[in-house]
Amino acid sequence: MKGIARLVGFSDKEGLAPPLQVTFPMKKLVEEVSNEGLESLLGETVMVWCLNFIYRGKLIGVNDKDILLTDASVVYETGGLCDKEPERQEPLPHNWYVRTSCIESYGKVA
Image (cartoon, rainbow, N blue to C red; front, side):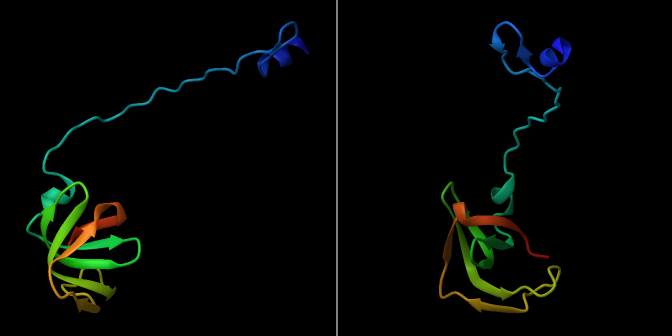
């Protein structure tokens, strides 16, 4: 029984022993790339999936809090994601700001 007690991390004399520390080697890629993500799409027509809505428009501004779309619209039905235009969208009346903390995904429109 002593061997089993030691195997699971218990000690007969001192009570509980500290938990076993098991480490597994892991390879990590660390690379810093400028002009990546939203910044790389400046000037492109993009589709932005947010918490509640999908927006589409030309990306003309990016900062740490917001993106700015011109010729923006709210997309209600995307249709085929490789189609040039969404199946159903409603134009917004002017340039539109979208909070980056609400963005779930985004990409350049085909």
